[in-house]
Length: 112
Image 1: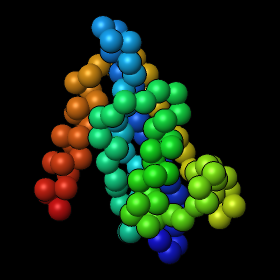
Image 2: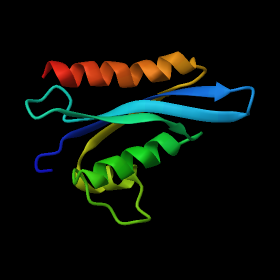
Image 3: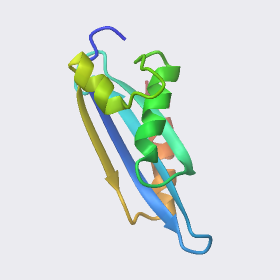
Image 4: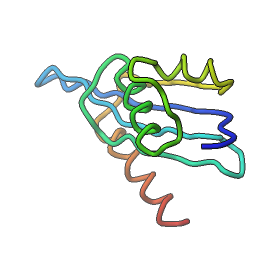
């Protein structure tokens, strides 16, 4: 993507106490508050720790927003290319909060 200025990764994490697994869901926003802003969904999926950042990199690569080397993390890519990156994960969320992210994303897409 030409003129990529910012990448904002926002995720929520839920820990399934019964099975002992962590899950996350979130969005990746590129060029936040600019005329060419785009939002991408990271649906509910298994992962813990920084998995949401790896998935954000994978998502942006699949949509040809960024082009990184295999072993290069998204922060290094942004640093090398002068892109501002922000990453945030809220922990101890409820499963329904993660599902709500997808609902909100879909509602926003249908209103466009």
